Amino acid sequence: MREPGGGAGPVALVLAVLLVLGAGCTAGVTEAPGTTSPPAAAAPAPGTESGLADVVERLAPSVVTVRTDAGLGSGVVYRPDVVVTNAHVVGDARQVTVELADGSSSPGTVTATDVVTDLAVVRTERGGLPVPRYCTDLPRPGDTVLAIGSPLGFENTVTAGIVSGLNRQIPGSAGQTRALVDLIQVDAAISPGNSGGALLDATGCVIGINEAYIPPTAGAVSIGFAIPAATAVDVAEQLLADGTATHPFLGVSLGRLTPPIRQALGVQAEGGVLVLSVVPGGPAASAGVQPGDVVVGLAGREVGSLEDLLGALRDTEPGQQVPLAVVRDGERREVPVTIGSQSGPG
Image 1: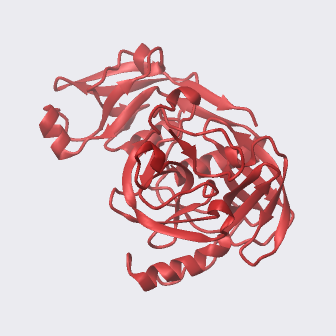
Image 2: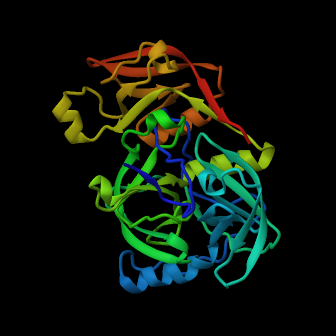
């Protein structure tokens, strides 16, 4: 029913989210330490044809093709000599070929992978690659997006669409993986070989790493998914530091608390994040959190939005006991929760 968005070869892994909140979010624009992004050109008019063409022209050199003996996928420059891609693109390979937008290629070594988030970092022999900006704020549904990658080997292919939804998981695949990624759903066309490529906003900022799609044979029309840039940046830094990535684990599926949802469900909280479901046996379940609760605080920090909660969770440590504040039936309650952990091999 599902196919990965990358790897034109025999790649079996399809990544999903259980929305157990593993990858935190830090606001703003991020640049890799010790690097400088190319000077930002004047922002084009969002959504205009000429503006989007300018974005593609400027960002295409930062998107690469990653080839293995098993097939190919895409990647995005993260540091002048480092590319971030999907773990399922590189598979078990440790040596890959990185093909660049100028037609040249460079040998690459897979430095580390993280099976939890399906991310990998590849160090290239060639340096001086152009580093794009990474925007770690979540986009909004309806925002214009561009996907750049190498579907079926067609390098630097561009597709356009909008953000269709946030905090998604691929239906039916939660049991296949321990992924902690709150995926961005888009309607920009994503095909085999796109995985690991860049999802850009209308200004050319990397807001995600393209991950997977649901094929038309499943009855889908333009349903694709990307890993948020906040997740990619956090995991890439950990993998480059020591070859592994550890993810604080809360064990809840969350939704934004919008005014219509508040009114429809009779939620008596002005801010916070709505708990949609709780992972049985997880940290939140053990603390007594229930579906319908509204999380309004974690670890002493007030939570008014999903980004607030992701940021607070990222600042915790697995095994640490912290206060979790929820609103239930109009009453604020504070309970202790022991942060869990999920990690994958490097």
